[in-house]
Image (cartoon, rainbow, N blue to C red; front, side, top):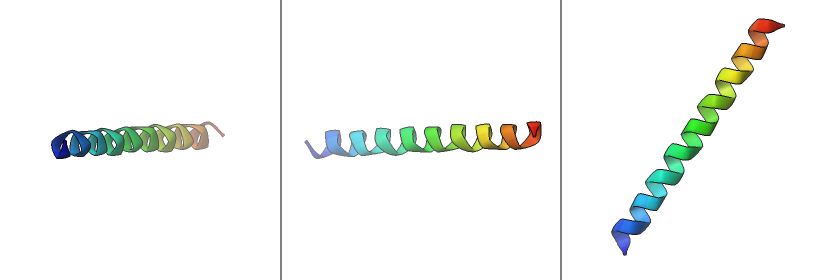
Length: 34
């Protein structure tokens, strides 16, 4: 049970990191455009 919870937490963290990096890259891209 604990392993499953740890796996879910890792997935959540990696998902948040991916979303943040996508957001940052899109902001940088928009900044370069304008």
